[in-house]
Length: 571
Image 1 (cartoon, rainbow, N blue to C red):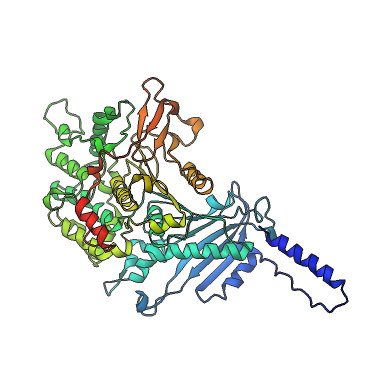
Image 2 (image 1 turned 30 degrees about the horizontal axis):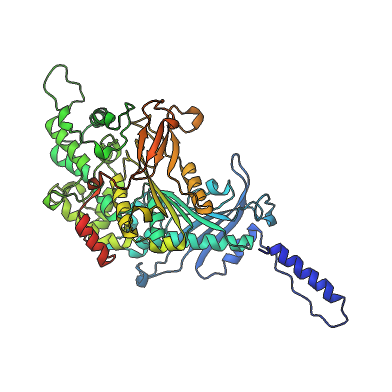
């Protein structure tokens, strides 16, 4: 490949030779010099889709390297035709960090400090914030982040026009997909403007909302990325968000004021479940390797009136509430509408005394379109009505559960998803559910694993942490991302990820492989259960617990007749 500098040298040599001729030779224009960081904002200001732009070199501040930070506001859409209010326009803020080019003193890589790779970074919750990009720029990647078109102060309220009480689908669509697509487009553009060349590889890296965003890119914009790392994905948005409120609805209805099971009692119930099911994998380590296999009943903790009863024993109503939290909301015929928290998972955030603002705001502002709506008026009997209303209103905009990844596969894309099985916010079985549907659509496990792999992390909470199961090896985003890069660039598909139960390997007491789904972690029966060499990942062609991943079809889905047939038959 001829580099830009090589081409320029060849042209200058040709010009020198021709100048020696007696013939008239017109001057050969030299290539325009590449812009410095400070000059990027002025170039961007001429683009009609950009309503604001700044560019500045951020100095090195230990431990971070210096980089060029470009902040832009994309405003391509506006008014009622695009779902906004009259006079309102799109305002997607994007921050793009560029390792210093040769023009700004960068050195050591392909062009200055750039390794010719992009890592777009995902958001969390309702987004609303342009995050730090130094995790990417410090290792030579161009990095970017977006607020997806609304400020964090808007929380979930941005979706509703007040006082009209109408949905603002301009802002909803920006949050769901426009924001991240513009992030991908403009990160590429800025890289080309600044370095004079495009990226060799593009990556997405996000967890929670960022995990949903990664799947959204693979489904809706399958050519944007070569590799996607998408953890604890908040896809199935129209279903899992209202299901997050299920536990509060149950305890509010079944228990006296304040309508909660106290945090110590919730902890006692989950600790009892861990103790009861710990040995299902044959190892006494306080880790539920697959909580789907645990069927512990909270009725075992009901107070008997004995003086020896602990203060954390449960009343019958509390035990019933805990079981319903674990089982998830039921639908017609006893089938699930959606999943509940896994046994052994902390209930403190979703079902504790503080409530959970994301699901509360969603029910009021999105589903009911009423800022004064009180979720406390929902009962167990009426919950299904609100749940289905959510599906019908928002599936197409933000369901993000289309299992057809064929274009992403044909593009050559690779995707890794992971999920902590003690996630206290996003129900892990939703990820099993989607992965199984994508597997069926791809033509089976052998086909889907050619480009898409799932790693369930036992004992891990939301995007990481092993609070209630301290022996559980932790999610390590860097190791997962490196495995993705190795797959994309070297063709090495990861069958397992070595993980450890502390922030660093040096401080860990447990090291084990985390197997790709549905492979099983198998102990050799001889070595220490604290070292990886005592374990292997046994290949499996089928998930024997697949029935635990099934729910009723989503009536809001409109992603193809074949897929609806799959849903009706198998889900």
